[in-house]
Amino acid sequence: MSAKPTLSVIAPVYNEAGNINELHRRVSEVLDTTGEPWEFILVNDGSYDGSAEEMRALQAGDPRVRVINFARNFGHQNAVTAGTDYAHGDAVVIIDADLQDPPEVILQLLDKWREGYHVVYAVRSERKGESWFKKFTAKLFYRLIYRIAEIDIPVDTGDFRLMDRRVVDALKSMPEHNRFIRGMTSWVGFRQTGVYYVRQERHVGETKYPLRKMLRFALDAITGFSYFPLQITIYVSLVLALLAVLAVPVVAFLRLSGSTLQFEGQATTLVVVLLMSSFQLFFFFIMGQYVARIYDEVRQRPLYIVSEVWEDSPEQSPAVAAETGATESDHASAAS
Ligand code: UDP
Ligand code: MG
Image (cartoon, rainbow, N blue to C red; front, side, top):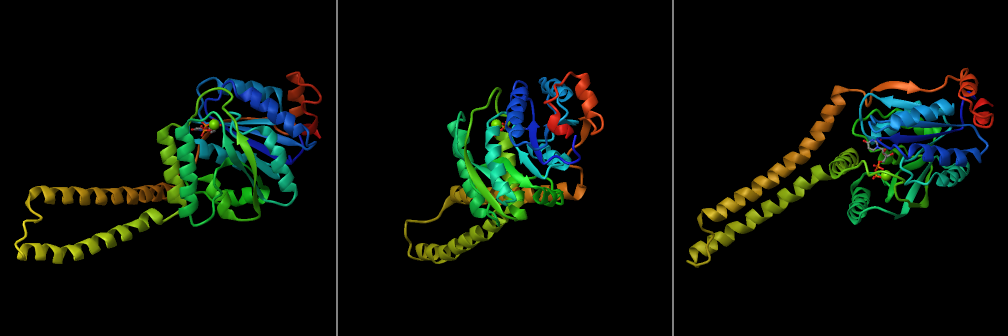
């Protein structure tokens, strides 16, 4: 294996049995056409469905494959982070393991990289095989974060992207928890561009992002890149103050004029008290979201724990390949 592969491809894997071999086949096919050395890093985020066995077998047959096993499920963004931490490539590509991101698009990402871009993100012009709810909430989310974030985070863009080594190193200097990697790669700057692609249906299996995880992810994105939720309190408080100021003469007038229109009774008070408490609790919740994330930073726990790494050491790889009966061409570029 050469000391430094030109290209690293990273895929986070959480219960993707049935997708791994096909992903490897298509990624290899695409990368082999570049004629450059490459490595394929699979980050096993605590899978329990046989994905690990598939990756073990894959790694035994191809020295360009490296498998990073987590001690448990640490989440998609932390899995991607581990991938970038372990990657050696001059260019690093992040791709989903379920083949929703077609590996063939990597060639377009590489073209832009060779033109001198440091981040090439893949923009979803269309999403196939996803529920209207997922498409609708995703569309809304990307536009919301685009509006309220301090930086421009391109819309309809997931983690499928290429990053130059400089960008990867910059990301590695950002140890923050509750990560929103698409925002972080925008944040670092450098020359960035996008290419369009059609997001495909999952090859096999179901989404690993239930509503609960999606909401959590959205909150990470918002709290990580915007103070807007904290700032809306001032607008709400100004509106309420204005209402109060207007209410005083109105109530006084009604009372003095002996009008039958009066704000009377416990019911009115009860409604106002409940409404105000709900406002207040809502803003407590928002503050709590930021405070909890501060707590995560203060504790300084690592982002993930690795239980085991399956990889060939550079000296070993030809021997291992011979042992496993891999063909010459299987590791030709890795051995060059
Ligand atoms: N994933 C992960 N850890 C998780 C959830 C997901 O590593 O806790 C991986 C998953 O295996 C896939 C990628 O992240 O490769 C995207 O997840 P998924 O396809 O389920 O999300 P969707 O495409 O439905 O938004
Ligand atoms: Mg998917």
